[in-house]
Image (cartoon, rainbow, N blue to C red; front, side, top):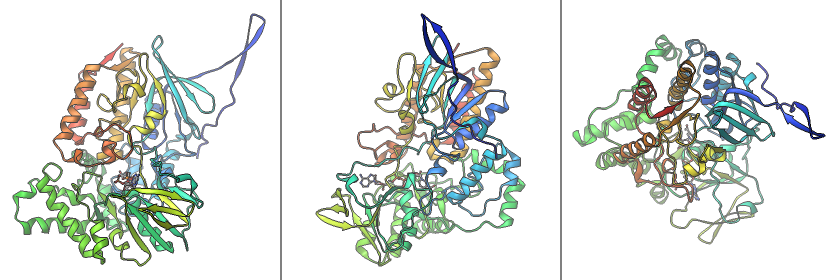
Length: 554
Ligand code: N01
């Protein structure tokens, strides 16, 4: 394993002037500074180096892995199958890595990221434990000046934001939150040494994917678990299991074929399950229910793949929603609890959860569900959580309250272009061209930025497509002697209108999801991801083929 870049002592030179000794810093300069060493930053670094560019990665965490470095809560695992949630850029890597389970757990995915870092000797160009604070673009020389929290200044031609879509935790300002006397945890910043809840009374606040995965495991450990639910989740069984040698061999025999097929899927994954090409309303009830039952038994996201209009037509969607509601009623013994767990919104409008024993957990005698949809959490007290005047006493609180998604981590960096800051440019919500660039911030790229398919896809498929597009753009600029690239305002406006138009054709904007920023009080409501990977990838390729249409190059 190579050694990571350490925080360096500043090298000082002495420049006497006017009889006074000044200290000036030697500033290191790179072709690109990359922010973040998750799957996006790691591949960006690797491919830039392979193509003769110099790059430095800054990463807040102590090692690679991004979301898989931080999200160590009990039960954390990927909801895209492990054979598909992996890099495709290296056939050797594909062949040598062995996944053990259908859905990989967090420790295994982190080991994979660490293996990639070792295999491609990435750590020598990554500076860990370092936060990028600000980045200023000097238009006279077309260079970014980047300041990190170790007080160091670095310069680069390009700034690549690989900060992740779900990396800035959302911890609501519950009244009295900091008065709680016991330990509290956020699922997205879980202690590395793990937490033992044995014999303790635990509160989990939230019922999104992180809660759905952790609740069944915490319930097995805790003396009592109280779940505070604002919106019930739709969740489909994972049917996780060990992978067999036969299925691994079958995929590895034509891995690139599977990758190519996945790139033709709307979400960039799932090509091994066939997709229904007709409306849910074109078949009779019996056929439809049989199809949902078949897919329920397979498990995972394929549940929503049986018909082609489940996220387009409310009546079609309702048929799938009804199927899940019936499973909840069948599974949960107490009718009041079952009713509370039953969602009424459009299924898939908030990200579908994939679970192992979630609804069954509410049959346990040590689990209580508290509805906070009508009466919000009133107060966190030193001894628990108060709702509607009732104190629920607990020894520990788990905030499974999600993330300031897609824009949170980008806006924490003070990025300043010649005439605007990113904060000002996005005051009314994120605006990008292709989800890759922002007018007013030249030579800056965002990997899986708002306005690109990103979180609606297998993230690694989207990351690879963006990384390769950015790399090819940098190569084209080098070949043509260009120093500066900026998305035009007109191209950006056109793209924002297009993303809104596509989103409005779907049912996605109909509920209060983090896709819309609705989970963070005060955040602008803009549907951030773009549905549909294949047409998007074609558009990006066409932009490049047409000489980076919509960008100004000089
Ligand atoms: O976060 P979430 P998450 N009072 O935003 C509730 C990915 N992921 O960390 O729905 C009370 O989904 C909130 O309630 P509501 C995946 O993309 C993937 O679970 O806003 N409750 C909600 O129930 C996922 O979608 C995997 O009404 C409050 C919960 O907290 C994304 O990350 C695993 C509240 C937050 O749910 C985020 O998932 C985990 C308040 N003030 C995560 N504020 C897999 O790969 C928020 N809530 C499987």
